[in-house]
Every structure is written in structure tokens, then in C-alpha cells.
Image (cartoon, rainbow, N blue to C red):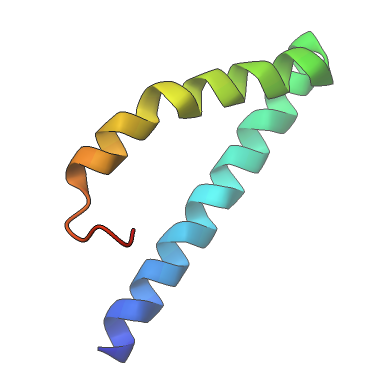
Length: 59
């Protein structure tokens, strides 16, 4: 059980690090406001797929 929680925690941290890097890259290219809007729209589009894949209603 503990190792599963650790893997889940590390996966969340990795995703956050990737999103931070992508946000920084987009901010350099288009400006911070546009980068935040682009990341937000991307997450809104991907969120239904995440919900379909989750197995428990608490997540």
C-alpha cells in the first residue's frame, strides 16, 4: 500500500514539473497571460479523460 501511494505522489510531482516547464516555455514564446490561458484550456480539455479513467469517486 505504501509503495502505491509513493508512486502516485511521484507521478503527481512529475506532472506538476512538466506543466511548470511547459508553462515557462510558452511564457517565453507568447507571454505569461497567453501561456496560462493555453495551459488552462489544455487541462480543461484533458480533464474529462482523466475522470473517465479514475476508478474511485473520491479522486
